[in-house]
Length: 146
Image (cartoon, rainbow, N blue to C red; front, side, top):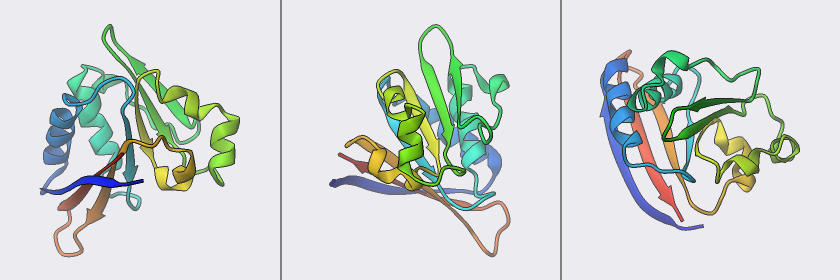
C-alpha cells in the first residue's frame, strides 16, 4: 500500500472541524472509504456531523457504538458510519459483512486501524490529534492510500 498524498489541517474549534468536514464531503463519491482515527474526544464525531451536514443529514446522526454501523441516505448518496472500537479484530468485521458496504456508498470508519487488514486498497485516513495546551485545537493529518 502506497501513500499518495499527505496534508495537515489545524482546527481551532468544533465548528471549524465541522466546516472542514462539510467541504471534504463535497469531494467524495460512492465507493470512497474514510478511516477516522484518534483518541476519545479528539473530534471524530464532530467531523461526522459536519460531513453529514453536506448531505443535509446532520439531524440524523447517532453514535454507532452499539450498532457497529449506522446508515444515512438521501436521494443522492448513502453513507455508512462505522464505529469498530468494540471489535476485537477484522475477523469480526468480516463476520458482519462489513467489506460489502465499501462499494455501496461512502464509508466513514471510526477506529478503522483495528480492521486495517480488511480495508480496501484505496482509502483516506484522517488522524485526529488533540493539542495539550489549547482545549479545542485539533490537528487533522490526512493521508491518501492507493
